[in-house]
Length: 346
Ligand SMILES: NC(=O)C1=CN([C@@H]2O[C@H](COP(=O)(O)OP(=O)(O)OC[C@H]3O[C@@H](n4cnc5c(N)ncnc54)[C@H](OP(=O)(O)O)[C@@H]3O)[C@@H](O)[C@H]2O)C=CC1
Ligand SMILES: N[C@@H](CC=O)C(=O)O
Image (cartoon, rainbow, N blue to C red; front, side, top):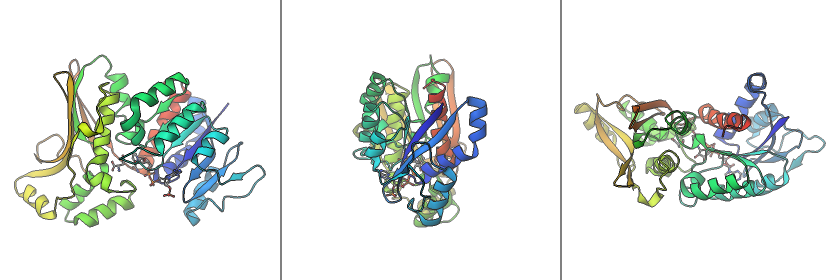
């Protein structure tokens, strides 16, 4: 039986996921018995197409590459154009909604409403969008469970590096009492490139071109993105209902090439460090830049790579290093949630 997918948002991650589905079609069918079809794509500026029997991924990617729009997607009988995100959720035959619109760090919208609508209509949701998980984890989880649908969000923290599934499954039974790491790809990339001599603006511009930065990069450079991720880790991994306003936050926008040089002269490096610690029945959290010595375990985490250490009472510290952002890497995060939904393990 086909697993029918509708994509809300067809930017870096949406296209990365579509490419993976195209390239891995045979492997997914042979190894997992997963016959996945994209039936709908709805994007604000690029437009929207839906066909209940499935769309050609080659054509979707080609027309967007050529024109930046879905308007030239080939006409065929039964093709419907122009559905907005909510119409796509309600009116298409998709089993799973892949929510890859932008992350709104203040309201989490419209992604929270997308999730609620999908659950009401009995559809699974997979997302790399951080807003709904950071701001509405408990109520969305409960709603998905009540409606007997699945909600995957592995890509919301550290892209395709399994920073959520790994501790929840493979570290189960431990008390994870402290978590710390580098959780934002854009700023880590920028700090690395500033060490190479680039200015702040040049480094940010490169990170944007590479598809790492948020639609509004203020979220990356002022630390909101890492803050959202630490809140998600508290809720999902520590099972503690930490709220966004409870996290101390400072970004890297005040750091200059002179600051980077001064650190280098004292054998240190600037890194944006996120921390989470259980203390007296509560959890304290912060995101801020720190000058760390070159022999610090995080000093050699460069470019858009991220790292996270889980401090566990039984297994001791466990560190995971991997991609923090990227088109294919985050597309993979969507795929792994899809495979787990298909296996009925999510
Ligand atoms: N890029 C990365 O490496 C990672 C990204 N993420 C998260 O994944 C999500 C997607 O990221 P990314 O693909 O890079 O972002 P992009 O900005 O490249 O793509 C987002 C797309 O969503 C579209 N969109 C915005 N609002 C709506 C809406 N209401 N309905 C339909 N489409 C909409 C945008 O349309 P348009 O621009 O045409 O208006 C855009 O094409 C974000 O939430 C981000 O935080 C998570 C991990 C890594
Ligand atoms: N903008 C984010 C993308 C992934 O979450 C980052 O740079 O880490």
